[in-house]
Length: 142
Image 1 (cartoon, rainbow, N blue to C red):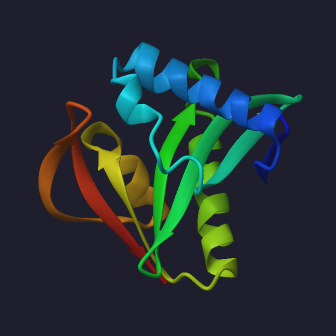
Image 2: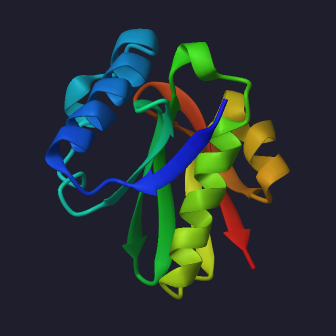
């Protein structure tokens, strides 16, 4: 498997990104589509993991008050446990570093916090619910 990570720049690619997010968050996890597709999509930076011209993983980031917020990491069910989530997260971190962002954070689903710890994120604060799923804020600093 040869995964290519890239920033999304075209409308057809963005449609594929949204389709994968719909499958993971809306169909699998039963989140509200009004929460999943939000006003931030328009101005966020979007990324994809591509295998043989097919988007198999996605993520986005926004820069808020000089901090990078990593969001919407989603991997196609058939491609999980293959390092793609790790790869796309590290790709987004590298992108943010190139933009001069040193402090990054995300809201991890509680069940995924161990995964993000392996990348270097640390949990902070109390748990909370987002889209009816238990989350914890995690921070990453160089």
